[in-house]
Length: 281
Ligand code: MG
View 1 (cartoon, protein in one colour):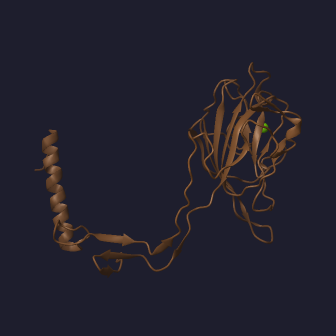
View 2: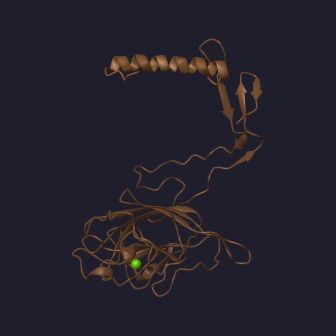
View 3: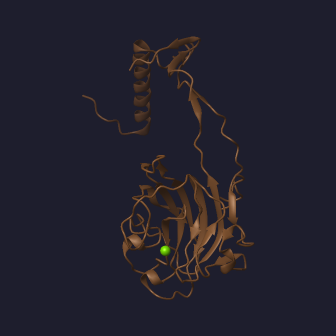
């Protein structure tokens, strides 16, 4: 009867033996692996002719903008934001002023990096403490709040899609320290007649911690009614909320996201040497 060998060398010997048996067995059946010196390896080919992925130079660190990013705020001024003149920029940091600010640039599917810091010392409680928000396409709010030791309703804490879902975990840093959001956004799609054909999806890292994973939005994120979708254009701005608290922001950049493209030039197939083989499943 077979028993599991205990020593590492015995296990290795058994693994080698198993591999040889497996290889011989498969060679006898369909020869998907070549035995050394006897045949060429079989290769799977998708039949897709892929476009060459463009080269993007990464930032110095993963927080710095890559070469294809639109930098919305680099610490200089808020000239790329409508309403930016009502906020202040102090020591390279934007501070919430009167009214929301809205980027002049508009985006569809995108990656957003933004850093923010709750007021220190903290003031107020619940929704009244360090409240702001990142609005994708000007209407879908990823909550910004001082959620460090500050209880509130869960689908309204930092990292929530407001009134739709809490974050999976609370990865908040204390007031005064910097938080980052890395947001991966899939815009909703609408028919010509205005009906929804595909909802919005969002994935978010809060300080490098995954808090939302491909969450499907139910619509917009108002306070006073259920979420709903209303048709809008393919691209929209980023807005930052003024909720009356002096939240600070820095290092804001966005990359439009386009998946790799290719053409299915032919059916998938197998190749061995010069020989093409059909895929029998
Ligand atoms: Mg808010």
